[in-house]
Image (cartoon, rainbow, N blue to C red; front, side, top):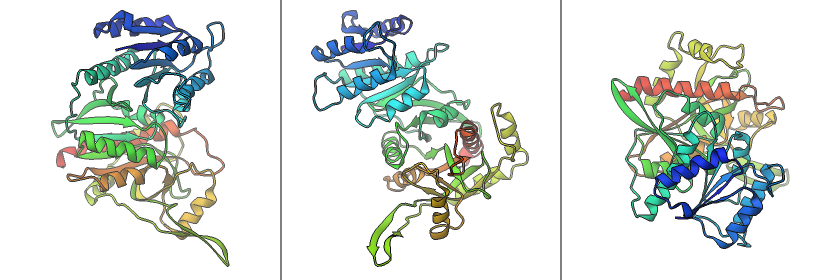
Length: 407
């Protein structure tokens, strides 16, 4: 196996090399590059199984590091020109979550996973070394079918949704590869004196397409009993407050239909297909909402910025679309023409519900609880995103620790 580490920081490169040697990778098979230009020289003549890539690099060693330099390198690796020899897998890592999100937004890359670098922990290091072990297993023909799990949790993005799930005290393991595009974390929780298994993963991009692909993959490989999506959404003002948790019941694609041109101009004819949550799930979510003091305690435990309004938990219609909304007139149109009891708008749930609904038997029980972080208007900002992701994750924790043993 040939590996290329592209990073100009010895404090990160040296432990990576030591970890790879511990897996019996010959030292001469581990190459390094300190700049993008140096990496290009190597990638023109050598085929690498794995490239480990810092997401902030200088073009040449005397330049300042830049995210743009890395973006150009990745685009060259996946361009049709094929000037550079594409590796089997690229693992990107950075201390800056915004850099990871921006690289994930590049549509051209294929087999690439990401890890958040934190100098205070070795989670990033273990995650990358686990990627090496995954490739070694493939090389040796040791790929195994993952065992069935009790719960799969799907987040739209790494932060703040996925990180809020990882903050739950569910004995999370180190990052590992499920396949060459999907990094997961395994954990466990207790309900009714029994321990249950959980796998958590996040999409590389927002939206129904990415969520549907990931949900379908996790259903096929992990065979979960439950498939759940936490996260953040836009709420309808007057019905929801910042931080309120919404059980999406039902979910539908509010952009699905037909657009026709006639004497009255262009008109859109909605053709909604609504997918509902089981009554067994909804009844238990409503039990949580009526538990005295629980939601107040969840809010009080949050140490960051939070709204003045009390925390509430609702069950009701949440529409799903393909674009981030900062135009409340669209929400008003959905209320008027599609669903007068609309509670929220988001971008993924219908895809997750559809994947579960179309899965072969035994189908997982699917539901989503997302929390309101804005009202889909021109006042949209990030103020309450972390708080909303936290309240969503806490309701998921309460649901499974209290009720999993009943299913």
